[in-house]
Length: 361
Image 1 (cartoon, rainbow, N blue to C red):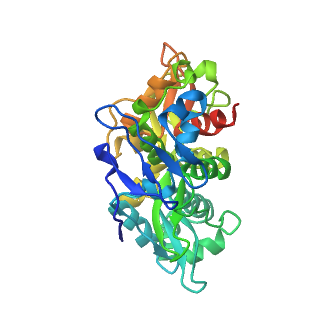
Image 2: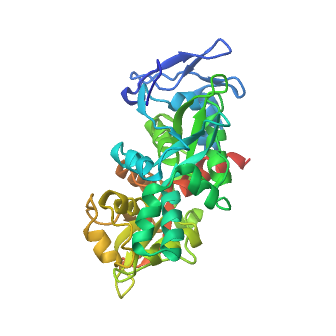
């Protein structure tokens, strides 16, 4: 379904709406260079001068001064699935609409009970591949309802994590980092409707729209290594000869969303992500999990032009700009020989610039 909201367009660099406490919330700096006020009920009133006083906390203050409603676009695509819908139809609907997740509605309980994600598809593949024949896997997957697999995978299912539209973007970042979910439904507390799905990518992109109008914190000019942003220990890698079922098992066992693909010397050649697994549903090849990653990558619908990477010595400003403009979820950290050293994700960046910096005095 399509959600329509009478909102300003975040892409035109200007916008204003009436705050609930009577003053205006301005989320841009004028084209002529004059500064405007930012306000929020819980945070008081901020001016550009206030932000200058403590540059290290500027991103935390910015996110606290905006609520989740500010991120809801004028028009967006959103799917909600009833738990009685067939699993096959649900995942094909996600693919057809270019979405990665959808809230689940239980018509008996008359409430949202969770999210259908690509991780769920992977859990289903793993379960039935290990317990059924190839033909049985296809039959099970195509005949099951969402409610059925939720019962069978009850130990893995979690209650829905959501946030009200009046909550601050700071609260949203905090919730995403604390619960380790990647998608956060914004649910209207009055009508109970899902208005939007917040993600790390959308939150960072929103902040980046106004980053050049805000005072620059000193840490932005420091390197990833100096700031210790990213993961550099126990990095899981695979090769093109690794089987698909092995990669699927690693996604779930290590709780990771992507795996660097390396050559015999450990140099990065590609990346295999959870989202790539959905191609199995498109091609109806989810019973062929013994093929190697090289074959799976060759059949990938969207071809990648190289792997986006960075180096530990690069500054946070450079890395943040690269990840936002490329619209990816992560960068592979490599050395000068392009050997994998680590991974830096959207979550890593948001957690540092918003949460950790906001805690510093």
